[in-house]
Image (cartoon, rainbow, N blue to C red; front, side, top):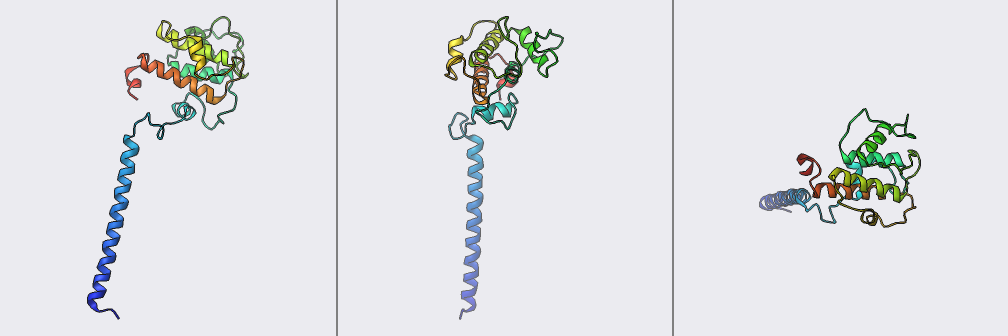
Length: 194
């Protein structure tokens, strides 16, 4: 049988263990929160995939499988959202009239992201060559000079020109476009800080 002193010591020991465990839990929570909030954004552990990034930024719709093919309209919509200069009253190119992306096509044509050789086919999957050309033109027209070329942009996704672009490919192209915009300070300062 326990004596009163032994019972008191046992009870005090249990309370000490509880406080130590509680303190360790709080310390661990603090360290995890500190680490995740101050981790290097370039760290592979903390880095988001290109697709996650593009979806979070609103350039591509969320919940799409990465290997699903993207349509020309969806891709161009993401490119022009990243381009970032919206205006209305522009002429819609033939083939995009009465389409949900009509304003996107009009803006792309007005800004020189769509050239005369582009075949307008909003609901068809886009080829690598078409996507690469849109991105290259979006970068160079935004800069008002040649910052990149077709071969460089194509190297970002390394596939045959006739291959159809997936959502993952699209996200990679748009993210690289964003990186060049930031590097060359082609976007507003407040956006560049994020």
